[in-house]
Figure 1 (spheres, protein in one colour):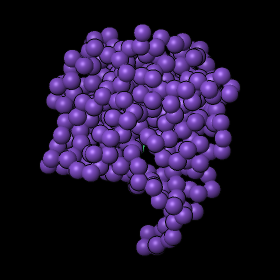
Figure 2 (cartoon, rainbow, N blue to C red):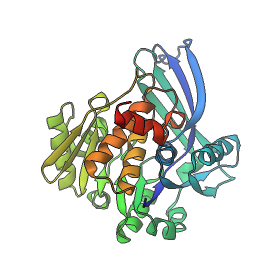
Figure 3 (cartoon, protein in one colour):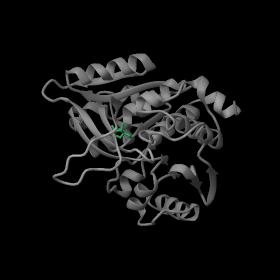
Length: 307
Ligand code: RIB
């Protein structure tokens, strides 16, 4: 039986521009492609988890506008249950996404809109839902006090907590101590530990430092090098696995987190969960967009079977 996954996070509409390079200040350049689609780390993770077979609820805040309709249509299609605070005094946010044409790498500016007003009270209003979950996941795009309150409620109820500490922010040891698992990328890990991460040994050192700061275990995501799990001096490394050329890495970390949560909710071992999350991420980077790139369960299983 699969456990319920509750995700606290934001939805924004991604306005993605593919170009050779970023313009300099005062300069206009011509791009190669534009795409408007669903984004926001919490929403992306919810969609990844639901398409991969999870029972997923998202706690968030939206305006009352066309981008909010985009969010609701997306979740309806993916099977995500929305737990939304409607905020007619604000707007549903958007992200500017620059995609480097040659590599598929990105640079992002997020304006959260209504989601910047996600409050401790919004989270408290979903206390019963959080307490009924098997896994609680959050990130750092909404206010930190709301994320901390969600982690605290989940921890007190014995719900497994996962923090994807993105975008990078300074975090207290008190907050880190509420995390059973933390999933930073290289630069987020460096920001939290002071350890510059460019090799597996660096990732192990950063993970050990995160455990000294209070987390239960760490998964450092390493882009094309895969992921490194570390707990109590033991490591597991799972290489990245893309079934085709990489065209867009936007949301790859979200795909991994969503897949990881589903596998853990189903009772998989950590190694199986890392492989499952890596497969979800591997497929997502071969497609354009963030939430739109998340694969179905059948696609993930086919990749894991080597089909
Ligand atoms: O993790 C990728 C996401 O970060 C994008 O979809 C963008 O909306 C930003 O929130």
